Image (tube, rainbow, N blue to C red; front, side):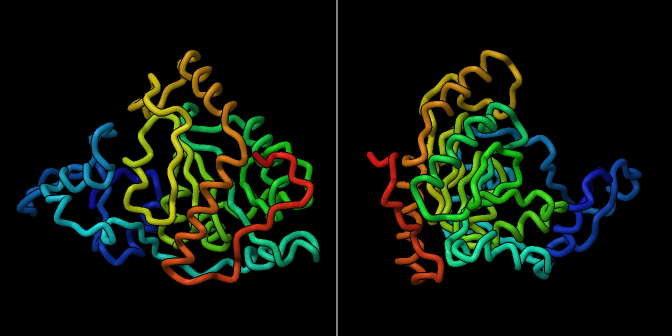
Length: 280
C-alpha cells in the first residue's frame, strides 16, 4: 500500500488488520512502482448517489458486487486490548445508574451539512433522557445538565480509544460518520441519521443499523461536504424537525432484531419513564 505520511492511526489499523503486508509513503520513486504487475488506484473514488458505497468500491476493483454475500459486506474492526480507563466508566456516575444501558450519541461528522448542530443535539439528548432510563455518552461538548449524560471526550484521544467506547456501550445513535460502521462491526443496535444521502446506500448490509433520512429527496442529496450558508440553513431545518421518539422507535426495532438474531444481551431495551412527556 502506498499512501501519504499523514495519518499514523489509519496506518496502524492497516498494519493490525493482517491484510496489508507493507506500507510505503508517497511520493515514491518510479522504480518502486515498476516492481508490480498491476495497480488499484483508490484515491479518486467519488460518492455514489445510486449505488451502495461498498458495491461502488467493489466495482472499482472489477468485482461483481452481486456475487458477494451480504454477510461479507459487514464491517470488521481489529480490536486492540481495552484501555483500563474505559471499563470503570461503563458503570455510570451513580449507584442507581450502574445497571442502566448505555447509549453512545455522536452528532458530529467531518462535514457541517451532515452534522447535527450542538444546540439541537443537546435538545435531542435531553428529550431522550426524559423518555428513557438510559445513560448517554458523547465526546461532543453538549450543553446537557443531567446526571445520566457523560462527556467521555477525555477517553477518546485516539481512534482506537474512540472505537473502544463504541464497543463498550449497548447501542449507538450517530450522524452520517464512522460511528455506525463501528456499531455494525460490534453488533450494536444503532440508528444513523442522514441529511444528504439515501440511508440504504450506507446501511443496507448492516442488519442492526437503521438509517433515517431526515428529509428524503432534498436538494442536497449527493453533496458530501459543503459550507454554503443556504445548505447549512436547509440542513438545520431538517435537524429541527427531528424528535427523540423517532430515534428511539427506530432503536427499539434494531434492539429487537439483534436480540432475535443473536439472543438477548445483558443490556435490554431501556424502560420508558412513567413521567414521560414526549410520548406520542
